[in-house]
Image 1: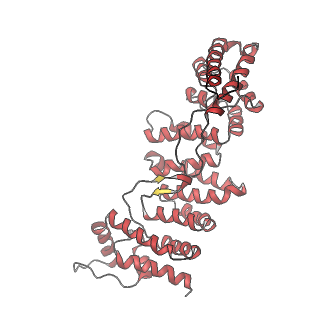
Image 2: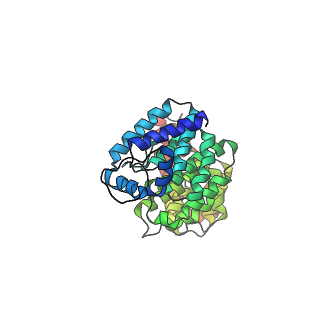
Image 3: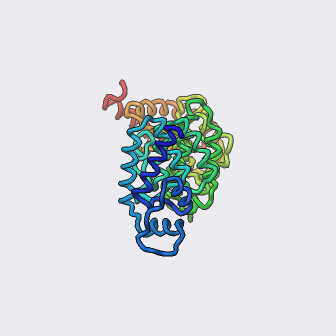
Length: 371
């Protein structure tokens, strides 16, 4: 037996001996066989070892005790070289060890989990920290079983971290789209499922737009609708030129959500020729008047919702950048007012010009722009 395997099995044995209730019923037999003798039951019954362990899990386990065991495991892993610690976690994951922590799925800076709802989610997260290459490879094991949206999301993040530097996003995109079409997960979305939608942003999965639009319909879970809105908005922030070009080629996208589409299109930096061309094509279409009015009210839309995400960084626009965008947009709006192609929007253009002129003047007074 190799040192690595012996070490990981010792960790697994320690967990089993300290907490016999540590295992989900689906993996009790395998985990017990790997860990040594079955703990002596508290009450003599005719139950099988599997049922005995399941009863222990159901009646003895507490989230507090599980969190204590995770802390013990963390200390044990810290004493091992990263490769051996990662191998130990893979052994535990393969054994099916799991338990509920009573904690929420919470993301912190850099996509790290601040807390995890289950032991397996935590182990997948730690595996990604210890050995990114191994974690990315192990993601396929999670995708093959696919019983937990929270595990799926962390596995996606682990896969993305290895794929992004290589520019190989097709596999990530395919898996996130697969996750999004798991109806049972979307009907009652967990926090981990919703956080996993950030991988649609990170992989620039334009194919997700119709699905996200479906989730914006009345009657969908409130949390799902909010997450869909944020995902659509973040996608254009992450890759504005490419995403806006896709909208130009799909005029039906967000037709059921004209006010949201106005906000998405107002993200364009019209100082950029390619983005301005997309916007001009959009304005020449037969969009609702209220949608066009909303577009001009928001242009340039630089507001952001700050949050920690599994993959993408928050996009923060400084006051100086916002002022420069206002000035550049003002010049474009003034040019549109002189073009007959945009005569339909004359009153909205006039209102936008007045608003932007006031913003630019204020920025000059505040020192954000030179006079």
